[in-house]
Length: 212
Image (cartoon, rainbow, N blue to C red; front, side, top):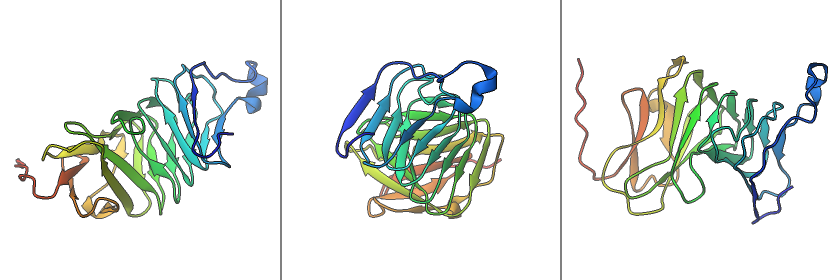
């Protein structure tokens, strides 16, 4: 349990409780719930029971920090810079982001991404970078319109920023109609091209898109 307004950093490696195949139902898992604090995982984790975020924020900040299992988020936030091999599901009131709190980064998903109705994508922009979720395999499934919240942690340059890339997903069907601006709607607008979702400051120079 992580208390509200608290940040706990786990630098060790989280493993399964047991290694014998016949006891796989006892495989370890990480669950953040109840008090809504922030947990940050920095270890080379091998727990296979999955990651559950029911409240608060969990950041996987090392390549294997999220372990090999699935990730489920409800009423909380999941983010980081890890490569996540398990399927990621963002449920109602769940939020997906990349990077660390107050620092941009890239989160790579190789097991696919499902965003249910009521889920949100949170994007931070710095002066020359942005959070980005990259699908490198797996399917992108959008059950309903996804709300995109944008926050600047430094004055961003007036450029298009890629924030969700499904160009290397095994399957994906997404268009601009699948996304709507939430926080930041007065300063940013959304674009979809090159199999990706982009954020652009309002008033920025338009991007030339060549169609063959």
